[in-house]
Length: 509
Image 1 (cartoon, rainbow, N blue to C red):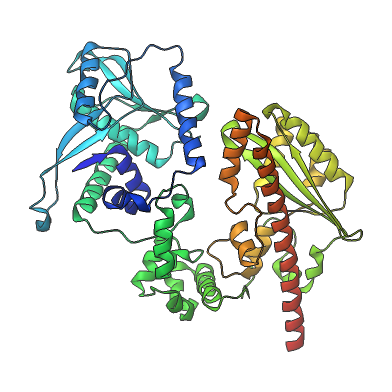
Image 2: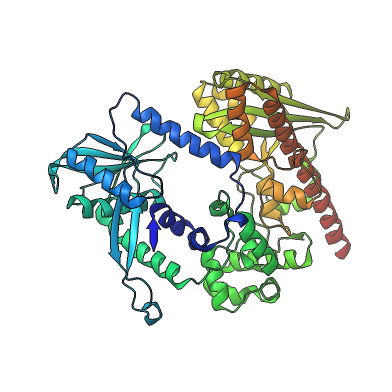
């Protein structure tokens, strides 16, 4: 059996993905998204930037012929070249599994990795008075667990080739920042992970579906797994059911939405705590009954001075003569917030106007920031509604970056109202996530471009910079305006829902 570094990396994120990569039907994978393709292009571009001006060697072999690639790499290492790009490291390793059901299987596994760089350094190895140290390039800004596991895998295979384990392995992160991996910590953890992965793959037991948006979002098997999860009505589609909480629920024999919805929260409290137990049970009830529900114990809204109880008595507090709805589009690889979109709703004049402050060039960011500030200061009393905290964090970043005086920023920030905080602190909804799209879709709001999302906009902006085709900009503007309108739609629904709840409570009294 072949175990590549990518299979190990995928296993660490999701054991099911590594299984499907080996045994799944390739026709059931999603087509590569434009955003995934862009990430690969960005990584390749970063590699080429680092390689620029350096002399390097790349082993010559037919792709997929790993033994030929490993032999070509060893030849370069024996020659003592200074830098090897995309070398191949290979090791035949015995399978150490005691389960008798595996006795008929091959006794060895071929481990393969391809570090971005192998860098020559002084030392003693099988080749002479030099050793090689692997180095990988990643787009992330921090050394993620999977990066360090992969680095340890490189080092482990390299040690079998050159006869010595390097003292450290380097990660080159975004902005060319270097990070040293602690091999004494990560090699043992990596070896345990390799054994787990091999055992799972040899058993041919397909791992259970578990949908978690953060990990599944870029996986080519997402739609395949999601369809299975929907058919099974899997508990991972209930917001708040994390992998660790799911294990607790299984231990308690709560394996369906209905069983979770019917249990008393007190039954879950010893394992999950009062707040989590209450939220999970009510979330399941909301999904099973397909209706919005007031939280039984509304939690204080963290980002404002108001509380959920106060809003219950004053739902019209979220209605103002003029309201602003704000959403941002960004290009993380450029650290650029290129579109600050504002929908101005004048209830008295019965008008709605969308203002897209767009940086057509990256160096226009300061201009659109000042244009945004000018607009919001035109309406000094209007609340500024947004969804999640990215907008507030971005305001602080832009203010710091462009030396905005505190007296120009603080009054603006004081008017920000995070609708995500209000919704999650007040109600439970029959949705699979509390992202804006999931909630707005449940409320009947539709985006004009059905396939548009934040990742697609990143790709569109990149295409605009490369092609100057304004259809990409037009699509981004539509999406951003729809985000603003979806936020408005959600806020208005919340006001109506709270008014109805308040009236019902009054009638009961």
